[in-house]
Image 1 (cartoon, rainbow, N blue to C red):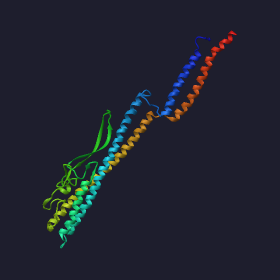
Image 2 (cartoon, rainbow, N blue to C red):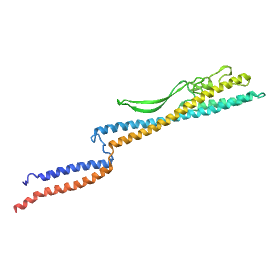
Image 3 (cartoon, helix red, strand yellow):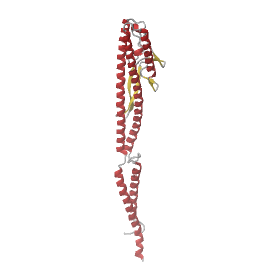
Amino acid sequence: MTSINTNTSAQAALQTLRSVNQSLNNTQNHVSSGYRVEKASDNAAYWSIATTMRSDNKALSAVSDALGVGAAKVDTAYTAMDSAIDVVGDIKAKLVAATENGVDKAKVQEEIGQLQQQLLSISQSASFNGENWVAGASGTKSVVSSFVRDGSNAVSITTTDYVLDSGSAGNVLFGMSGGSVETSTGILGTSSGATGSIYAMDITNFTAGQIQSALTNVEAALKAMTSAGAALGSLSSRIDAQDDFVSALSDSIDSGVGRLVDANMEEESSKLSALQTQQQLAIQSLSIANSSSQNILSLFR
């Protein structure tokens, strides 16, 4: 039955056109933004996961920056310790030379004195961003190493620690007091027996036995410094490995978020073409349905 009051064909065609237009609008949004899930209304669960993981990725980016700063601190300390080892090695050579008969110990001491001042200069200069890891009071230095979200969604920051020991067999060249280098503590500053510390010893009037004692003390200092250098080198390697891991983890999170919310552009392109065709057909169907009422007039001619 054809009615001039109710055009069911036009209503059906209009409903189809509305549905096609809505789908077309959604597809065009996916194509233009590149996202399949851009708002919470698109998919609340995926949007929530993606938002949380993007936030965590920003935290990981900050961790990567902190690791860079930490690596610079450790590298500065290692460079200073390595240079100090060379200088103490030179002092050792001077002591050996001083054991020769007829050697002017005062002249040798002048050379040793310059080397001792060089050790102090190295210690004072080995600072990065206000932190000195080769001249400092006993305590703990930390480097931010990771941002962690556990199974209960609790978050925390983990650190890599390096404990400073200002003893004679510790891992700092000198101690620190009131922001200034303390030359009476640390590997080079701690006094040992009658010969004094590596930094303060004066061999001008040393006997052969005292020079031998000084050599023993220098050898002990070199052993402690070598151990400290090895620890700093190991810490540097660990920081580099952690930095690589954080970078890879950040990339994995980006990839995972993309799988949840990114639009499949090949699929969206195909869908866009199909919907545009459906839109044209729906418009054509609506036009035909609307014209059917005009055909009724021919019955009354």
